[in-house]
Length: 393
Image (cartoon, rainbow, N blue to C red; front, side, top):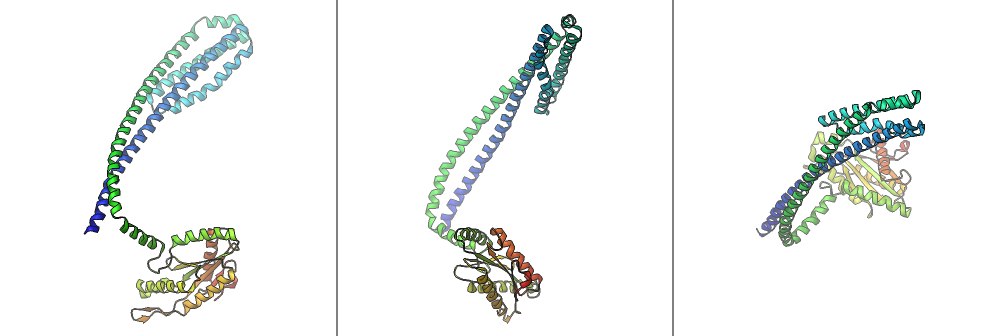
């Protein structure tokens, strides 16, 4: 009863703490989403304002360049005009892309674009008159004040743009500040409550520490072992293979790998039932534990496949061990439900690092391919990687 209470207290505390953390995470996430969205909107507003200001600046530069050319006839003045004209279309493209989801903004931008292109046509007409008809003709066109009226309309529209953008930016800034304030308040409220609860949980866990440690040790052992055969599992093998490959590279000693597959295992399951299949797997597991060297690692790879990792073992040693294992499997007597099961055999693939591969994945593939060849060429035999024609029965 006491143990149950000791378990229940931290469990309840952790559950409440978890709920607090989830709440805090949800608030933080939501605040983060809002801040990102608001910051993006603010950045878009600033970028739009920058582009509009740049557009206005280019118009002024173009107009100044045009006047200089009309007065002096010097074509050098038109370099600035040409630069402004060249950047006109890219600037409008950026403006359209930045606010494409705002119909009112796009409508205003259409009006601005029409005026800007109209202004450039007027500038171009006066430039062409200056080139072909002289100063007087260009001046006469300029004196009509059409260009001034167009520029005044452009300035007015740009002023509306900038005024609207300034208001929008102020609103966005206020929203960002409000979001930050709310996020800060909720963070501290949840954090303080969580700290108090965490203190309680730590105290309860301290009372339960000895039993928890004991449970952890048991779970750790179980996590590395296959529960049916008692052999190490795939997770342990993957880590061990990588480690042994690294060690082999440093020392220069070879590493051999054997992959074993029980022949026609599905037929045993279908004919005698899965319990009989489990009996065969347990028997193979016990046999491998007895057959491997002290430094070798026998693992259940999955299903009816097993692997044996042999550090510091050259290929010849691995082949000899493979022959012994196949022979031992042939001679096994496996009892089940008061009678002996039919004899089983296995197929086996062998590979050596670094002879057959340059890394962990490669040696695994090499041994697996050899196993495939052993099964394809008749089963109940061993094949060394790269030696398909030399299958050993």
